[in-house]
Image (cartoon, rainbow, N blue to C red; front, side, top):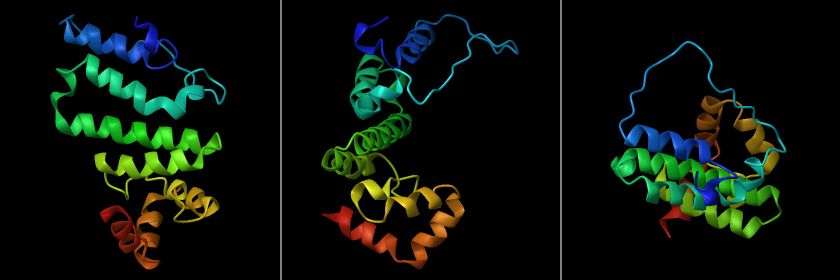
Length: 154
């Protein structure tokens, strides 16, 4: 295992190595590993650096991530996670920067943390993210799409 990734994503890195080296794989009904997500887990304490971790994984596995759509999706979620992690750690400027940069890898309407870019209040975003269809309709009704396009065009 890579020591750089030992706190987060080491299991994912290991599985990619196994698959890339051609070891046979098959589906099994038996549970081999049960991953428990806890609010204070080591992995979650590294959320603010998730974009750096995932960039390293992409660098280490160029064959797997030669698919542009997979690479962009992997990075899009990493920047969203890093933005959220920085926001909750009180680093609002960094959270906003990461959120804005993350839009380069995905669609802004796909679970984009608008509150980190200070576009709408946090309580409204939390409510809205509960139901994505409501979120898409709300965006249109209050004109957020045009505001997002203007913001991210520059």
